[in-house]
Length: 256
Ligand SMILES: [Zn+2]
Image (cartoon, rainbow, N blue to C red; front, side, top):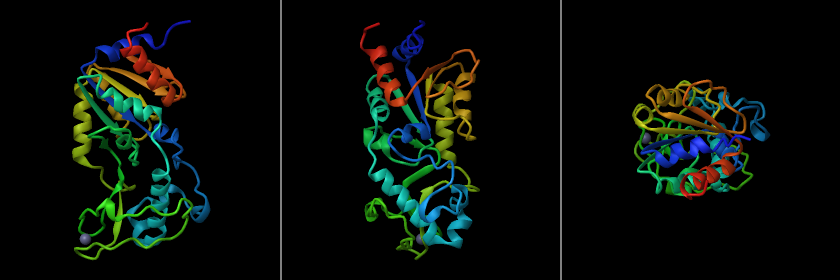
């Protein structure tokens, strides 16, 4: 049996610049739904894409704010898993580590990762819909765990506009500076670990390809192999919460 960890562990042990690129699969292992299919409860008539737009928020702010508050509650009640923790520990093992995530939760931060680049915004960065002023997260009290209900958004203290979730909605432009930094890190790294991401959501999915094109190695960590015949691309198949601690152990413990 070939040891699939051998090359990835060697690459990790020798890397100077590492990018960890995470997607919904990593959050899913903490019990956070991926919201790819139909919703349930109050929102069962809707596709996620129908609620995650500026138009939906303007048409029915209480419905949309209620949905995001419910999602924020799920995150508040979830815990970082072994993958989040291994990623945070990795920062002390390599000279430079950048965490880039497509996830809108704060599980990387709660595991101890710093400077996380959130490509699609964050549930914890609400801001005014009208003037853009940020709304202190401290002002937001988590709702009840099963608070599947409509909820009026708070009002901006500067212009009395509605406070909206700090996530990137369909039809909105992506945070340019965050993407620019992620692309730069990907193009300058030695190794990119792509974890729990289908690689289908553009333009985020360009990030592993960019690293490969710039000469880095890429390790895909997923329950299913990513179809990649690219040179310097490797697969470690399994749950991120199992693969990541094992990969660190192999790379840094000195044991074969
Ligand atoms: Zn405002």
